Structures are given as structure tokens and as C-alpha cells.
Length: 280
Image (cartoon, rainbow, N blue to C red):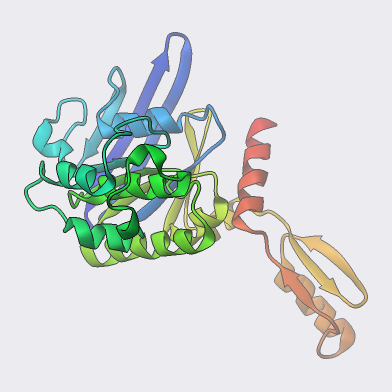
């Protein structure tokens, strides 16, 4: 088993009488891209802020890179990268100057110019951050998050504003960093296609509890959202498409004309899981 770099057991957090996290258990491994999904108000932001060391007052056991985030110091923080969803900082800084300034605070930072080129920011190196487009500002946020060579990277809606080509390049970068450098990534996103593309495992958090955790395929299996079987003679929703296909094969005594099996997407599985949780 790969090294566990984030370990959470029985994590609870309340704001007054409101229980935000209610017994969360999670393990994240070195080199893993892990996605946290859940509706608004599920507790995702609170959980991530606890792991980042920004929030105290919780109970349970939490270790990130072997330390309790509530008590860890600056050396521990230097091993983390954080890309938040919103930004209002440093609008007057020029792109390269800002990334170089942040890089100077690390012992072994990435080469600034190489990083800007990787993220498609080379042409914007001399531009002030405050006049960048939303997509380019998002790339700058990512550059600031990874310039220090973090061991754990927290990404909150990282590709908001990216065009399809920039999103693909970013996904390839994250996959390479995880595979080649052992970077552990905790991703929160509402883009289910992004989660499915990047993640080895996905956890669904609802009302402060982890409902399920596993690969996208395991999530679909856990939910058992129905598959759609179509053929020239009709269509049928079923939880066991293989059995239906076999029955049709027997009926037609051979190949089934126009046979098509459409299994549930991650988005359909996720929405079905949320709906079931709300109606319990």
C-alpha cells in the first residue's frame, strides 16, 4: 500500500448546534488524485480547511504528512500547496514577479519561467495580475500553489474559466505531477467530468458524512443507478444490463439488432446517490 499522507478518523465539527462534520473517516495516499464531492452545505469547505490547518475546534484524529494540522508549524505548511476558489489579492503585481516572489520563500522551488510556460502564462509574464482574464488568473493561482513543490496540493474548482485546451493541459500537468513526483492532490469540484478524468478515488460527502468512497466505477456500483439497454425492438432501464443483453441474445438466437448499452455516468450516479440520501 502506498504511504498514507492524510489520515482522518472520527472527525467531527459543529458550529453551535449545527453538526457540520459527523464522524468522517478518510485516507489519502501519496501520488493519489482524490476528489471530494457533495452538495453545498455538505461540509466540504470545513473539512478542507481543517486539513489545511486553517480551522480549529474539531474533535477526532487528523494527520496530514504525519502532523496534526491544528498544531503544525511553518515547515509543515511549506509542504502544502493551496489553490482557493476565489481571489482578490495582489492585483498590482506582475505575473512573473509575483510567482518569483513566492518562489523565493521555498528551499527548492520550481523554475519560474518553466512553470509559467507549462501553464500557458509565458506571454503574460509582464502583465499585472489585476487585468488578467478569469482563466489566466486561475492559471496564476495554480502556479502560486505548486511553485514550492508541495507534497500535498489542495485544489478548489481549479479549472473555472479555463477553455477546453487549457483544461486539458492542466489535467495532464496534474496527472504528471502525481505520477512522476508523488504529489497528492485533494480536489473539490462541481465538474463531474473533471472528477472522473483526474480521480483515482472519489468521496461523496452529504450532511457531514461520507456516503461512499471509491473509484468512479465503484461509485456507480454502490449507487446501482440503472443502465439503459436499447435495441431495434425497444429499450429498457435495468440494474443488470448484462443479463438483459443475454436474454435478448437468446431471444434473437444470435446478434441483437441495434443493441446499445448505456451505463450511468459519474454525474448520474452522483445525483442518484444525493437524491437517495435526501429522501431517507
